[in-house]
Length: 265
Image (cartoon, rainbow, N blue to C red; front, side, top):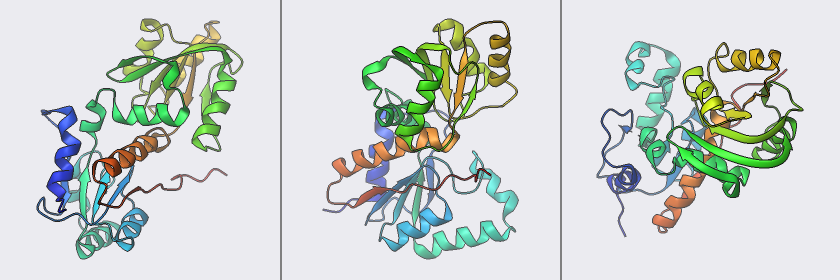
């Protein structure tokens, strides 16, 4: 059975429907190319691309772009950079197709990236509501500290960052993947959804973390756990790999996980 890059892309974009503006696109490769293997990844790093090629896969589906910016046009500003040149040359010489899947998967109902994180945390039974940019979780008899330790254990993280009272009781949690932890997204949710805790990927450090610090000073039990961008979204790409494997059982599919980008010393 022959499956093309275009066939796989259509299966990815279909559930979200037609979007207006989007960063999602086939960055390298041709829609008519026959797919020999699929690798999903949060980030199409040099190692991920090399391992995909070595495994015989010719389609990489990445949540973020390969060239260090949310917008593909940034690549034009670093065309003379040796790191950019080496990576681009490898992609071309290896004959890899790269499809950026960012906006569509976030528009799945529920959000496909958030769904993957909820599954990795084993919190589906605690999820009471899905908002466009957050999932609302309800727990009983726990604390911020206990939730932080549970998240670390289930996601295999050595550290998370916490703002607020670690020993405060925690019942309602807002789960915001990726770069949704900024004040405009996170701060209103505390009041609107009566949250005790927000768990996010990342956001500006002078926004929600400082709001939570002031709330704690005022005696208000509000807390924030910051996972890291990749740490909050990688599970969504693992879930996508399993779904693609079910949809295209004749094609080898796997998710390529990366090591944390930062070393803590």
